[in-house]
Length: 343
Image (cartoon, rainbow, N blue to C red; front, side, top):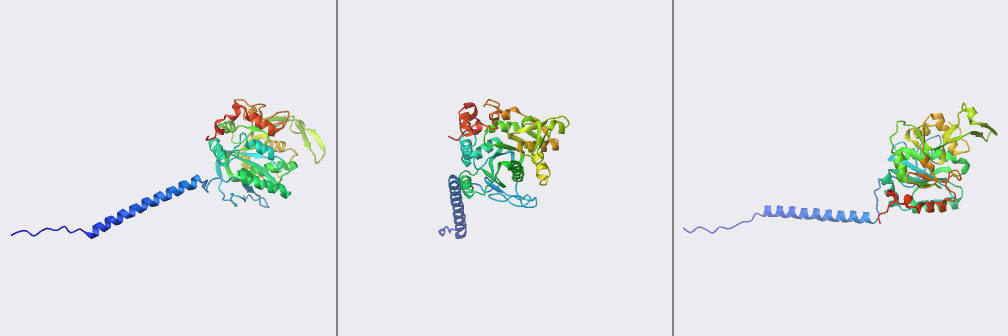
């Protein structure tokens, strides 16, 4: 008996299932491609991670001694995130120093945000210009334009005035401590030539003393009290010892020292007319370790110099706008590995 023909009957359910899975996989692949393309495009267009450390920030201390930080990119209150760096360098500047800042941005301090970020990543140091406020609206308007263009400022809610430099310096250390978890906090003036790579090596050294006052030290033989209008040798007041303190153009305080300064109540220590004398007097009272380093006041750029300025002729560089550019022409200074561009 002839056998009946055999027919193949496809299973619709299995075929449909495979097709659905295949389409689903294709959709996932397509979505992944589109997502990756968009992400790369946004990055190339200059979009940045919003969780990075704040650049230009405005810092205001609440009345009553509070330590809240407010302003562009900073978080107010006691739980603000402190960004971890090895050193924070605050370049003290003023409204009359536009030319100095221009020269600095043409030399060791990059003028673009990407360059500044590369420098900070290479050295472990963060750099900001530090300035107070002015009642002159035109000055404040020009400052806001500069902030918007370069994004490299720390703005303090304190009047920018030469006679108030000690108050500005204390406000700077408080603000820097609130924003950055740093091993050292460096005060630098805008009229010195700084070598960030050399400074980074200095701050990275192992130290046995946690309370360190680092600078180019000098001895001040005279104590001055302008309020009482009398002058007396400090050697007499301090038991025949001279007053050792760092030159003002650049010095650094370790984190433990700055933490003690931050904890001080206003007017706890006397303010003198000179900012470097004021800080030096406080360091003497706190019994910190004085670390003298003459490379922080080098008269010319050498293989070991860290900060270059015209000591003792000028407190900083004489004619800094021109001298900064002249020093930077030397290959020994400008060919630092931390200053190389991507070109």
